[in-house]
Amino acid sequence: MKLYDYFRSSAAYRVRIALNLKGVAPERAFVHLRRGAQRDDDYLAMNPQGLVPSLVTDAGDVLTQSLAIVEWLDETHPKPPLLPPDAAGRARVRALALAIACDIHPLNNLRVLNYLTGTLGATDAQKNGWYRYWCDVGLEALEIQLSREAATGAFCHGEMPTIADICLVPQLANARRVDLDLAPYPMLLRIEAACMAVPAFADAAPSKQPDAE
Amino acid sequence: MKLYDYFRSSAAYRVRIALNLKGVAPERAFVHLRRGAQRDDDYLAMNPQGLVPSLVTDAGDVLTQSLAIVEWLDETHPKPPLLPPDAAGRARVRALALAIACDIHPLNNLRVLNYLTGTLGATDAQKNGWYRYWCDVGLEALEIQLSREAATGAFCHGEMPTIADICLVPQLANARRVDLDLAPYPMLLRIEAACMAVPAFADAAPSKQPDAE
Image (cartoon, rainbow over all chains, first blue to last red; front, side):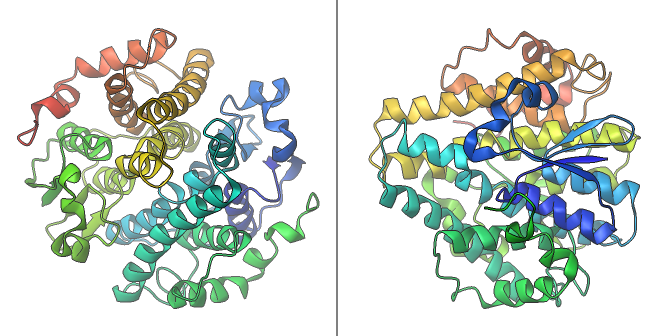
């Protein structure tokens, strides 16, 4: 198994957490997004989207999209489970994960920020305002939902990490990189602290990766 | 079961297709996004994200996020399956779906377009350029992947509709709304035509909904 990774990609960070939780340590290659290595012919031949992460399985299948990779890991390496056993619980966890993966993270992606400052001529202040705005909109809704639902436990769903936590922790790391004030999100911070006490999360942090700068 | 829907929401369109494929016809309520009904207190009390769709189950659970709803439907109403039986196939289908749901659709959302023209002062031409740019980037990668992979059949994956087709058809409808030239995507158009020959897809189209304008 081989992971195509980049320390600062929050999508890759999700997969690193999931691999650590499952106790799976693939070979790794590093795709330097800021230098555009994801647009190299070799990488595009493998992953036409030109995004990280990609995971090449032992059978030679190239898996893309972090949440698809995490679901695959959960199906092929069932312990510990990253989704609850009941359909309603699974729907809740997936919805929390997608609220981050679809409604916050895509707007904060490097390629999107580059379009704002390049093609649209946005200033750095406008770019950072955009970044913080979409983080706040998304995190505020998550804070409300997690605060009022009884299914929330030490983690987003009960007492064990799930795919929701795997998405939350990298998103909060992103928010800190643009100095977003996280004080309005005490529930998210409490869950993040519970996650970071788990070595699988702490060891997946960008600063601990071999390609960290 | 009750679906909170809006004819022009492509996320709701996905869920309508899935419900039709499963032969499930929930009660429906319509949330007028262009009039801001998703920000009404009653709706936010149910769905703090203020997005559509929401699906309230017979058990009273409020499900959000279209792909989480579709996975829940597939788990609770297994026939016909919307994912292939093998883990690698499931990963491929989910990745195709997420390449649309995470990497194209969020950038074309009404609220994002409103931020561009409102807060950032983008012109209509710049807004439409943005919309077309992200559609093209995403659809081009899908066209390449679907064209070269043997797992592609009459539909995105083999000979039966999956979650990937459920995401593709609404995204192509969105692309047409901004007059995107779809000629560079013959594979996507061929798959779309196969889908639209299935009543479950055709009946879910925005123009056929009770709230269509």
